[in-house]
Length: 77
Image 1 (cartoon, rainbow, N blue to C red):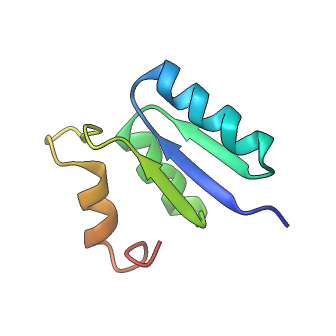
Image 2: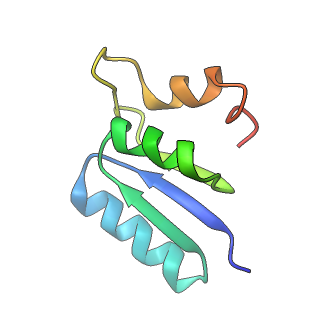
Image 3: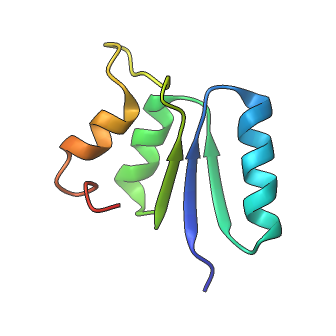
């Protein structure tokens, strides 16, 4: 079974390059462009790895990586 990777990046071009590279190497990739969508993905599934842009913020300007690290259910990802 392929490892599942969540790619959360606002820039379409960057996200698409990362997704294509990971898929070519056999990974199952879920690509999203917003913190809200990434958080939604985490509620319904657990990826093996998260690749995120440091500038991906939620509505309150909180970085997505901070949201992941502060949630006990996702901190080990």
